[in-house]
Image 1: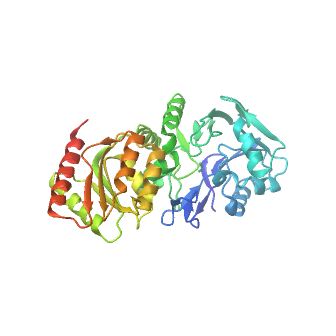
Image 2: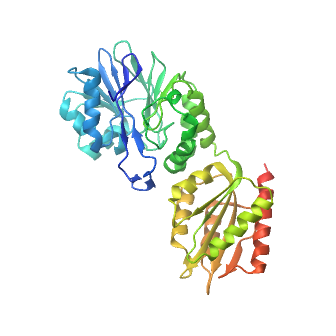
Image 3: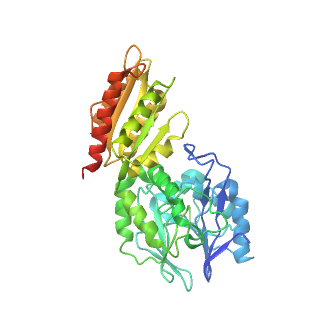
Amino acid sequence: MKTREVFDNIHWIGVNDRETVAFEGLWNIEKEGVAYNAYIINDDKVAVIDTVKAFKANEFLDNIKEVIGDKQVDYLIVNHVEPDHSSGILALRDVYPDMAIYASKKGVDMIGNFFNVCDNVHELAEGETLPLGEHTLQFFMTPMVHWPESMVTYETKTKTLFSMDIFGSFGTVNGGIFDDENDYESYEDSINRYYACIVGKVTGQAERALNKLASIEIKTICPAHGLVWRSHPEYILNKYTSLAKCEKQEGVVIVYGTMYGNTRDAVEILANELKAQGVRNIKMYDLSRVDISYAIADIWVTKGVVLAAPSYYSKIFPKMAYMLYKLSEVKVKNNKLGFVCNYSWSCGADREFERFIEETKADVASPMVLIKSGVQPEDQEKLAVLAKDMAQAMQEA
Ligand code: FEO
């Protein structure tokens, strides 16, 4: 048995993806994997809510058969057309050709654009309902969380929210899909990383969507990724609210690039100085060794950030350039920042850091530290000043 009963006649029919290396082709999930959650309501009318990534369609179809046997699927609800949830549509429609598909107005367009599926595809309006028998579905639009067509589905009898990407996380579900079957707090890093990298850019819209959902009585949350929250929905609601507000904990995330170890030497000294200043929570990421998503996730939840990089042919170390691009894109808020540049004959990293500061209106805690090749005693003093300023910034509201 691979499916799980959420309630009488409401079943999880999702799959785990332990094969994909990079989610969206960008975010490393080699270690954690990801779950594509889908659900079925077996009522007078049978409704499937979301599909799974196409390469898992056979498993998904087997799951449907396990729940409904030879019954037909009447409706498919497409909350979100990103193909990790929608690319199973074609396989599903092959088996259930009379199935009606429902999505938001933009969703209908996008289903046509992605899959050339246009017949028997219907547009849903805000608050519209779809009766199934004992159960009734109601739909709420959540535009730009995180695509323009995104919406959520609410089941009124059990007060269950099928929330697509909202309240999701990276990480497979390992033998248990429910929060109470797992040490659910162990998913915190996966939730942070998922939010920061996937939803972070649209955090303002996410906050608006959460405010809208706050007016609905929700007892169970069934997201499209990660755990199903039936016993502790308040945990994921509070967690997402905090992430959407860009709330920070004390600490410093040091993200650095290094070619021959000199910039690494500088940040090692900086970390020692921060610790001497009483900063307990220090995380360090070498951009040549770690996917940037881990650093972005920690930056999202941590107040202090130091970016350190060498120059590279009068520009910034390319991996730091990518980091700056992503940080600019997600518009991280409420951080205190410090910067360290290293150069050998002509600097360039400093100009790109300055441009980043100007564009993002970054709250800089201390003057930029410039180091010429090896770390000299006077550089150690500058790093000590940076550490002191960062530690002081932690104390500010
Ligand atoms: Fe899980 Fe935005 O797709």
